[in-house]
Image: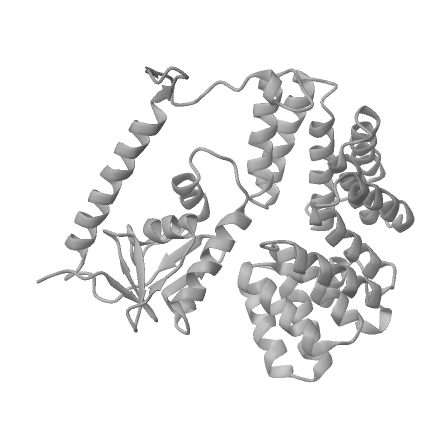
Length: 395
């Protein structure tokens, strides 16, 4: 029997040609990285694959955040259509699972096609990666991992400090207390290797801000002083580093010094006008300051301008819309946030509030159940402790 690929909702995937075909026979476009994620899931159908394993398989040679994977999953679901969430399932706190019907007929054909694909990729890698084309046209063997010269690394003369920073960045992007602690060790080692490396201080200050935002540690005055030391040192070492001002602005927002937070975020925006992170977080701070309408305008611009806005942009916009009492729009933004990260506690908390405010109690209870299933404390006290901006009447 001829194997003609896998039916995935509204499209069919042919692993030999790596093409997606709609029911009308037209080719469906999918980004290359998203195709690689799909192939990774197809290699182990009906099995939960961790985010780390997918990231290691698809982005083996670079360091990326979980948001890159989330965007690929969203791409895949968009082309699959109405059954997308049943076919590509998010397994909270574990990873993703591609659910297919009986594999007994197709499994051997799948493995043959994926084996052919893998061999082709390996041969292409060998052809392009193990040789360096010289200016005179000759080819000479080189190592698979190219040495990075210190001239290529901005901000430090220490390659080792830079590599430690990249390791820390990878851990920080996995967003848990354990990974945050691992990232802190890497950033501290980076600073030990180069005490003048401004970006390492900025990354560490930002990391601590995220830790405080998520109540991953009991915040003492000494913790506040230590975190501000890293942020302020980053700015003093390199006043023109946008990340230094971004990190310090984020820290000041955590410590409720909103005027200083806005000042540093405005500097970050001026230093790198094309980077939407500072603008988006500036919008978040405007919500904290009570200017929900102004925050909506800022965050709407950030969402429009970013080619692939991460989930927290939509959370920030939904948060601002909720406080502006534009509940239907808030619900849409928060649902978009959850589409990008189904286990985001931020988005689930405010979506509960939106449904409650609108009187949709059944919907609010369903979101509350999802929040509780992820292991979060559903008590009012616990939730309000994690809500940085609320009115006493919200209780």
